[in-house]
Length: 307
Figure (cartoon, rainbow, N blue to C red):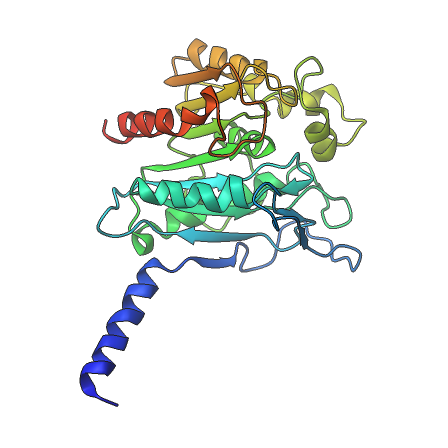
């Protein structure tokens, strides 16, 4: 082989290795609380048309997909992304992969979490399965911060809909002992971005599907309160950006209002944008007032990261 051609190939391979999107299993030493079942197998549906949402069903083996920011643009920050789907499916493309690429454009590394969906057939306690995965993912990013060129003190979490509930749960239950972790690396996010999130499991404002899928239909009031994240806020809860549409008929905007009120009560930095339209599940936006939310988020991120 021509030596110049060989050198060119090596350079191209090195460039690709820096920008490649790496997906890897989240748990290297066994999944906590796992029940092995031949009845449950992951599969995908949809995603064949531009308006057809790609859905991931029955996640058994959770994973993390890394989108490192280009080195020439990177500001050292990172965001763990939790796609939504009512704890029934994962809308992993428009609330995951597309969002990761948008964050890369801002110089932020992104990590899309394919978390387990609550299922008694594969979990000894389905109510903590997603939270176990979220804690593990945040610790994994922080533990490997140097490898990915990330500042361990600028790692946030972002969630959409039920993924917003998981992101808020991580923000309020980051210290909960939901699995035996092997290091003392903190699972606390440094900031959170909650996009049309399910925050509360209280009857008057919750999304019933998300609550029932996580806790079951006969959950006690104690369980409901524990996973109503507005009731779990304290002075150590991370700063938050809340995005919601007033005409959201799936997850009432009151979810974000309640969280905002509690953040304010504990003097935690917070910002909220309540748009006139948009409904629910729009990802980075379609048309209407809500479609500018990503620019609002960019401005907020700059204010948080440049302090």
